[in-house]
Length: 152
Image (cartoon, rainbow, N blue to C red; front, side):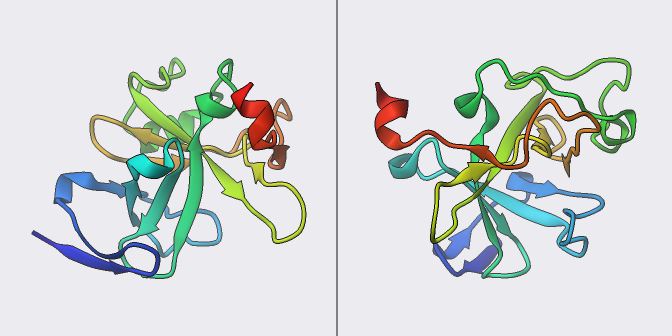
């Protein structure tokens, strides 16, 4: 079984079917084509998108529906094609695709979620893209509610 070394989780064994392949990488990380989605039960619903190549490259994310249960995807035809999905309609989150919002957690201030450019992963073939929206319906700095507001 293949193994990768990670900065935050130590050595991790994985199966090839667990790898998410990003044909064009991620914006600003175009050379990073393979990631593992790590979902530690103790930190649910937090998700980690770990580079398979660089131990120190790991993005913190949340399932987009955990942030906005009414989130409406707007994936471009080009991105749908890259995911090998039907370009004539938007895929169903949780059905055909998983959808993650990358979290920014600054040292000062509140954490934010990037709802403008979610990570969309085809569940069937494990292809992924960061689907940058062309509209301004959502923000790349959607402020996350403090924990006490989320739980009440």
